[in-house]
Amino acid sequence: MDALNSVINAVNGFVWGPPMIIFLFGTHLFMTVRTGFVQKHIFKAIKISVTKDPDAEGDVSQFGALTTALASTIGTGNIVGVGTALALGGPGAILWVWLTGVFGMATKYAECLIGVKYRVKSKDGTMIGGAMYALERGLKMKWLGVIFAIFTGLAGFGIGNTVQANAVSTIVHENTGAPVWIVGLILAILVGFTIIGGIKSITKVSEKLVPFMAVFYFLGCVIILVLNRDVLIETIVLICKSAFNARAAGGGFIGASVMVVARFGIARGLFSNEAGLGSAPLVASAAQTRNAVRQALVSMTGSFWDTVVVCLITGLTLVSCIIKYPGIDAISGDGGTLTTQAFAMIPILGPIILTVGMATFAFSTILGWYYYSERCIVYLGGEKIKRPYQVVWTILVFVGSVSSMSLVWNIADTLNGMMAIPNLVAVLLLSGVIAKEGKDYLNPEHIMDKDMTPIPTVDNEKHGVLF
Image 1 (spheres, rainbow, N blue to C red):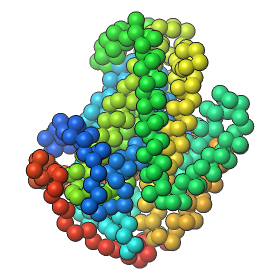
Image 2 (image 1 turned 30 degrees about the vertical axis):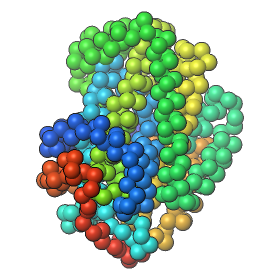
Image 3 (image 1 turned 90 degrees about the vertical axis):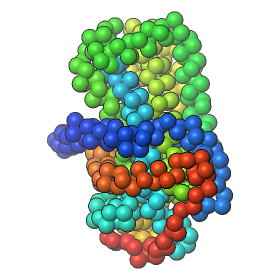
Image 4 (image 1 turned 45 degrees about the vertical axis):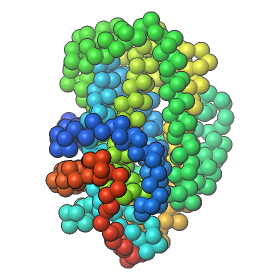
């Protein structure tokens, strides 16, 4: 097992190495220019996200689709992932995490636009879309769509299920003493009852859980920052300076080159907001929306809330705690330990924020990633496979809660990176379509009332390609 883990680690290091980071971040920059800096419409996008569009075709509201996507992206990566970037890259990595959120909004907008534009309707009226349909219908590259679906379906078992369940059982056990098997059993039951109702059930839970957990965590971090207000200016200055001058870090932080700082910051930022991975379009395609641009704008706010807001507040909290409490180990390279130590410096409040945040973030990720994986499995095998898949998914929640996840995490992390490749191919090759759609609809007189072309209906039982 150690030998296998070493091999997987090596593969994972290659997949998430400089070429992938350049590919992803480069796409963010390219799409920012190609869309005319679509990020400038963020306030319009936020307004649309809470505006109902009941007359449009779709399964769930635009806000429901957004919160379901946020359920999967606002996860342990926002807490431990930011801690890992800080532990390995120093305080400057926090700025690079933030920049991936700013520029990643353009890629999230682009991938969701083509996800909705090329979506189809099953015979029972369910909306289905994502990178596989953009590749199949927009580029006539069904084979690449199949590859995306396979990578996403398999990645879900790890990154979206077992490792998240393990995070919940571990954090609850460490802070309450509850046996991990009991935590796992309760978690599996909650997940099972939620996913059996499909996207509408998942959306109902996400609409209530995501705003609560995000606001709770955000306010908790703000309270800690208020307590650390005497070092807040120093925190901000240190983050900005050390992002471009690693030697400016000092104070016990890890010493690293600017390239290393940028690499770890960008990698963890990309991992957190999932912009470019192709996950968000899978649920965006189910939204009730009159045109693709409208939902693309709503989906774009996901990267804003996830990285520009939540990851930033986490980074500020961690760095300020490390500056104020020198006893925190900031150079071990262990993001989880660093995060736990930092929050523990605030008596009572800190551990509560971390525990509730980790547990709710991980639980919501299990729900969001179930839907992502389900859509891909159905694409490959038809609707008949959905019920058995729900059973397997629920069982794996319990298995993940009581098992060691190091090997599974590395495999899932690798698959997570590989699913980005076909999705980015779709985004880049369809960038002309994306730019045209934006030019046609990104005007006040169009964005609210322009209709989409009719959505084709497919027999999903006959659409399967593998099973």
